[in-house]
Length: 330
Image (cartoon, rainbow, N blue to C red):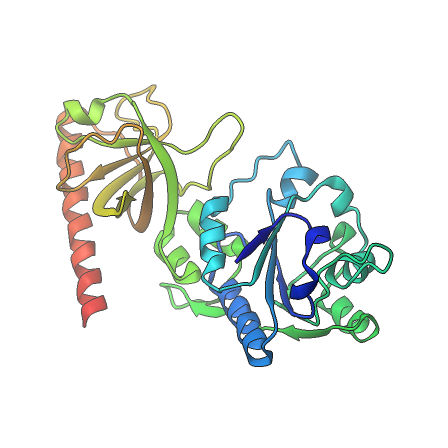
């Protein structure tokens, strides 16, 4: 897979192929359906397959005062997109100049070939979803692709939205915005139905209050954001059952998101208690997966009742893991 960061550097030998364009935040099941169709079309015609995405998200440029927390880090997104075996992964920095290009100019000079500079992707087939927009002010739509394609020399294939039932049996069309809403409301099991995998957050283990250790239940305190990186979207405050993964290891984990109201003044944090694990994790990069919401973040009368509740959380985490194992192995 060739990784590029500008369409002007696109090799002529990889032109006349299939192209999928999108932010692909989360690389969810709808994205996967579209990308798989793009890969299949390229394989059938024995032509190159290119994925174009953007980093950072264009909203960072258009609305710099409104932090946007992505569903995936760039590293996670690249890894997920690589599973579709593109010949080229084109990751474009969306400058204001780039975002000001009209939809027609974008198609004519980037998706096809700029006649003046002989640069561009030269795609012969665009595979997109039904809500795809592009160009200045997001004025370009799939209707634009269908209208201009015959004139500019490319075909268009539109893949229907992916639908899935949530836990309450509501049938939904999967989208990044829906997944964001589910995560923000603690509905991580439903988010997993839409993503095709558990929602996860990656961070570096740092020193925290060390209160868990004094209670006999040590936790790994994750630094999920920095001064220059707002970090991934975090689930609603609460306690979750999940897993912690690092260095090719995977452990069941009871995960806390919030400020622990039992001890006023505790800073907001993401902490994971790894079951049956006691080694030092300071400085390690770990990924926590959120499988199930267990309960709200509640205040308790003191350390003793809090410890009792945490033990219940740990027991529930084991029960969920056992249930999942039975389902997956049956």
